[in-house]
Amino acid sequence: MLLTRSVSALAKTSVLSEQQSETVLACLYSGLAILAEGPPGIGKTEVAKAAARLLNKSLTRIQCTADTLPSDVIGFMRLNPSSGDTTIVKGPFFGEFVLIDEINRAPPGTQSGFLEGMAEGQVTIEGVTFELPHDQLIIATQNPLDDVGTHELPMSQLDRFGTRLVMGYPDESIERAIVAGERTPGDSTEQGNGPSLEEFRQLQHAVTLPSKCVDYVMRLVDASRQNAEWVQGLSTRAAVALVTVAKALAVLRGQVVVDYLHIQAALIATAPHRLIRSSDRKFVEEEMLVPWMQGIPFP
Image (cartoon, rainbow, N blue to C red; front, side, top):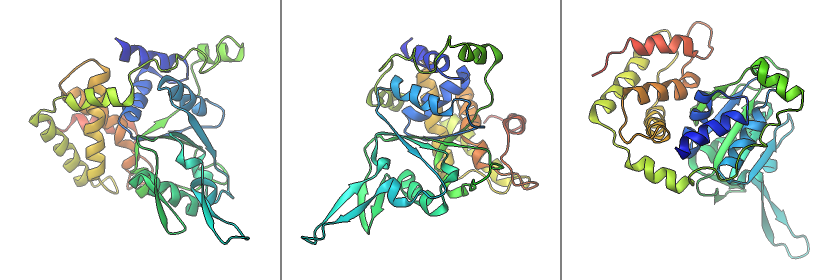
C-alpha cells in the first residue's frame, strides 16, 4: 500500500523506527506540530528534510539562538523615511513547512511568537494580525534541557505539539553506514511519494469513530486527571489530538474504523509530553504510561 511505503520510506531515510515514522506522518498529515528532542548531531533536522521531501513541501528553517528576536521569526514593519509609508516584511515563520531548530534556545519572548502561530494559525506584527499559510506544517527540535543556554518550554506551548519525538543515537548498523558514506539521510526519499494533505484528510474524515472508542478516550482522559502522581491530566485539546491521530493511524494502516489499538497507539504518541510527574517535574515516560493505560478497562 502506498501509505505503508511512505512510512517505510521515512524510516529508511532517517534514524527513526517504523513506529516513530508512523507517528510523524500521522501528526503531519493531521496538521499537528512535532517536537523532536535529542542530543545534537543525531539527525533531528534530517527527519524534517526527509518528511518535507516525502510530502512535496518546501522546507523553511529557523535557527534559534539566545538573541533571536520575535521580528526575526514573524517579521516586522519597515518604515520608508522619505514617504512615511510602512510595509510588512514577513519572517520565515510564514513558510508552508517550517523547521524550528533548537526552539528551546530562543528566549521566552520569541517563543511566545511561535505560541500564537501554533495555537491560532496567525501572528501579530505591530498590532496587525496576519494569517499563516493554510495547512502549515511545523517540526521543532530541542536539545536536552541540561544543555547550556536552553529555556524550558511552558506547558501551554508543549500542549500545542501533537507529539514529542524522543530520539537517541541510531542503531550501530545505521550509524556505521552513515559514517562509511554508504547512507546519506534524505537521498532515497521519493519526492511526493504519498497522498497530498487534502487527499489524506478526506480519507481521515471518512474514518468511522465508534461511540465505544469515544467512551474509551473519555475514560483515559478522566483517569489522567484523577492520577495524584501527575501534576495535571490531559486537556481537551489533548483529547482532540488523540482522536485525530487515532484516525490518521487507521488510514496509514489501511483501515476505515478506529479501534482500541488505534486509541492506545495514539495515546502513547500524544500524551507523554503533556503529563508531568509530581515527584520530579519530569515527563511521564512511555514505560510508565503503558501499564497505566492497560489498567484502564475498555467500555
